[in-house]
Length: 284
Image: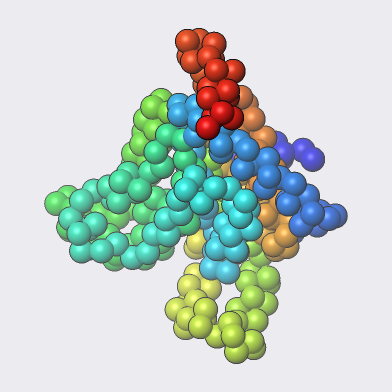
């Protein structure tokens, strides 16, 4: 599989990316990859030099929740932390827009998954600029103050934030689940047609769907401005969930292999006495 075709490494047009690919035996292949990811996280934890931040963005129904469940199923539960960012709380609004994300970052040795991320601050707030007023920013008085320059400046602050993370031992990998409007319609209808899925449906989903083109424009802009060599974005075709999970897991494993995580060796004075320690235990 050519994984580079999913990476945003130059200016892109989002419509040029596929929303659907079909990988034969994707679930079986994912099962094998899960075991490899588990071993990778074990070695990363033992080494203790790096943490991993996995950012997931996508339109409603793009499959973020189920992807997290299936991709990280075999990783030690203590080695993965998932944060799902909702509407900012009163406390969070009293801080800068990155604060709540900073305090949720993974420690070294752990994988952190942001289900919706700090990019909501240049996505949802750009589609609904009135939300920014809740932050009480002194320089923002009217909607006119929330122009493209405002959001582009925020993107630069995000770039600085992520660059700082990388320089201090956090591996940052970002994935956009690229769903088609037609498939979103099918998934919303499924939520309505299957009683057990009704709880997932919100009338707000239909209101946001009407803003589809605006969201696509904002996604394309942020992908182009914030995909860097050390903090790349990958555009994952999301219409087929099994294939999307497999592709993301394959990219994640491929990127983490580059770091060659290794557990530290025992100090020589301890390693020298291994046989002695075995004997002590066997003679109890």
